[in-house]
Amino acid sequence: MNQTGLMPKEELMEVGKKQKSMSFGIPCEREDGENRIPLTPQGVELLTANGHEIVIESGAGNAASYYDHDFSEAGARIVNNHEDPFRCDVVLKVAPPDEEERQLLSPGQLLISLLHLVKQDRDAIQQLMHKKINALAYEFLKDESECYPVVRSMSEIEGYAAIMIASEYLSKEKDGKGVLLGGITGISPAEVVVIGAGTAGEFAVRAALGLGCQVKVFDNSYRNLRELERNVGQRLFTSILHPQVLSKALKSADAVIGSLRYFDPQSGFLISEEQIAGMKPGSIIVDLSMGNGGCIETVTASSNQQEPVVIHHGVIHYRVHNISSRVARTASIALSNIFAPVLLRLAMAGGVSQLIKEDMGVSHGLYLYKGILTNRTIGEKFNLPSKDIGLLMAAF
Image 1: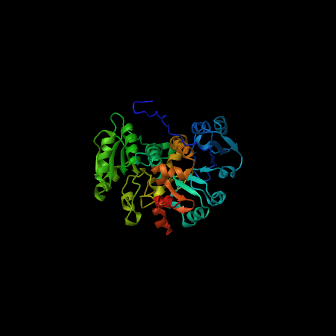
Image 2: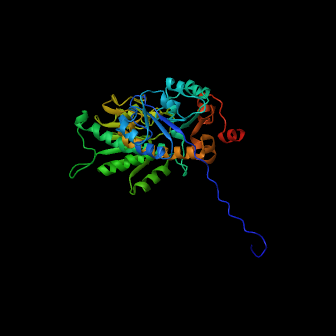
Image 3: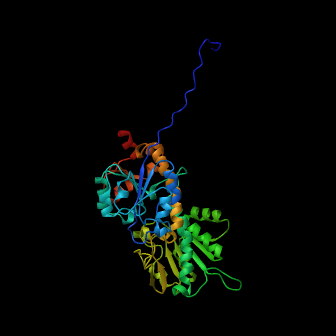
């Protein structure tokens, strides 16, 4: 008893939320050229150690050099059919589900995958809505710093990979003109033009500079150009996208990396056919914007890893939209590093309904909640009704 005559009370400790045991399904990817898998054996081990079930279709990780025994040793259950992973609480994919896979989904499930909005159609979105599922898009997911972690990670990989691809196709091994993408003593360095000063452009610049290339960077934002120079730590040839300046740079370029993601092709392509015709025969363009329709007038349709190039006016065009699949193991590790913690938070919250109340980044990534469209961009594109996720959660 203290001086006031009152008995001291015991301190009340906060009671933690009870973690919900969940099942996560990973089917094989059916999209041509998609080699990535969203969880590595290390990610699986982290989840199974916390009491969760991982169901993986046999062979799902083969293209990323992760095999069934790697996953089973980490605690996953390997199944021999495509349907079992779609019976789990959460279905985790890379490519969007095809029509047959959409039929396998059930009300209340959470689908986590890429959306590929440019390639989507209204019927596919409506089919998901009718299934009354929850769906989260890789592209819309945010982290605590308001960045898009999947977009950034894949852009970093694609920026580096674009320079590797350019180097490969300039060699005689790929019937190129036999130019070393770089520089050695007594020989002028190869010239690389990078269009777009975002994340992919920055990492393409880093890779090209590392090889000793002469690099020129164009962007429609002065701020982006300034930030890129600061990030790479040196002065570069940089310019706003003036057509005459760009045309002059293209004429002497050995490799061009198109990495400006967000633009409107209807208002004119960034690189016109006339500019392509003025480039050196045997030079190469790697367009990282193929997933958004491409930024080059001569090629607007993407291809696959089996037939990745087409030649126009003597210039090689590399036109694959998922370049990070070329280095599928690295890309899979990047995805697993992002999603394993998200899935743990999902289970700790007891489900998606509570998680989107606690995590604004996940809330931003969710485009379907119980079959209701919560993303205005998708709604406007396909003329579908959408609702604000905050107002929707208040109603529930």
